[in-house]
Amino acid sequence: MVEMPVIDREKCDGCGLCVSVCQCKVLVLVDNVVTVIGKEKCTSCNRWCTHCEDVCPTGAIRWPFEIIIEER
Image (cartoon, rainbow, N blue to C red):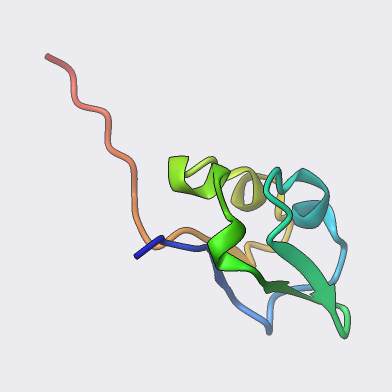
């Protein structure tokens, strides 16, 4: 199963920044709230790009995992 970003609809202000950076075009605005569509079309998200989470000014998008880099 492909992990997809989790959207907090209450926090989304409909700015569309996440939609503009989504390389695989699975984020769209529906009724002025970001929505994930076409999960099977997602290719960049399989690499966990997290660009949508990075640009969201309200914190409405988060990925359901945390990347931890360990020093060796």
